[in-house]
Image 1 (cartoon, rainbow, N blue to C red):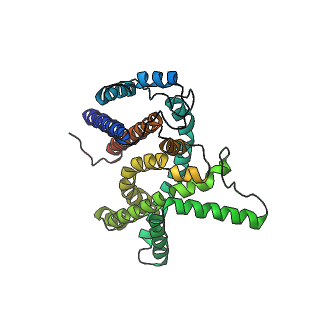
Image 2 (image 1 turned 90 degrees about the vertical axis):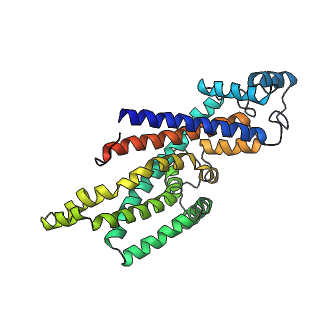
Image 3 (image 1 turned 180 degrees about the horizontal axis):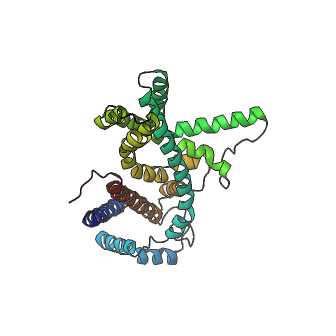
Amino acid sequence: MGRYALKRIFQGIITVWFIATATFFAMHAVPGDPLSGDKALTERIRANLEVKYGLDKPLMVQYGIYLKSIVQGDFGISFTQENRQVNDIIKEHFPVSATLGILAIVFAGIGGVLWGALTALYRNRLPDTIIMFLVILGISVPSFVVAALGQLSLVNLNGWTGVSILPIGGWGTVWHMIVPSMVLGLSTMAYLTRLMRSSMLEIVSADFVRTAKAKGVPPTQIFTRHQLRNAILPVITVLGPAIAGITTGGFVVEIIFAIPGLGRYFVQAVQQLDYTVIMGTTVFYGAFLVFMVILVDIIYGFIDPRVRLE
């Protein structure tokens, strides 16, 4: 198990290096000067930035400076936000995105497992048909459409009742988190429901389930200890990437609901061509995603006793 963990960590480091390299060369292929435009930099500040990031040097020298800074954990200074480190932007705003993502994945995970198990138990009956129809809608409708409809529904609900039942936007209380987390986790819940349903249908007709029924084991115990426990393994496998994807993929939801998360700053950095913020957040998001995939791979080996690693 130790060798497997070290191997996965090494592969993760290679993956992060590839992400950082691809981001660096992609940003330098974008037309435009990151130090020009309406940033109103003095010549002295511009010269200091060029020296710090090697912008006056050949591309490969800049690449070496960039990799050295990443290894040291320094993502640089924002080109558009005065005297603000990219590390400080990540530290301040990623917890907001992480909180929203955790709530969304809890909603998606619980809902996906329960709805998936329910559709398998009521296969080809009315509950199965209704839930799978809603699942198809959840997968097909883009998140920005769901977010806009959710916010519009809140406006109509608050206007109809004459009371602000839930905030329309902003951040700060639990009430601000409810609707955005549900909107963000909806598509993931739909995907997990389909995955759980397929896995559950395979387990229902398995030999060990029929054996348990023949022994007279209570149906509730068969469902929880034999069917649900084994059917949930594929869901756990994709849970790591799903957590990272939700946590780092809430750009649209954060913008629509005016949530001060890291995704909102990433979008602003792209619009303003802020190289350091774009590259820093991209590498951070990539590293976080790789870490979650590795973590789930290692945990999976402990959960499933059938896994044998050489």
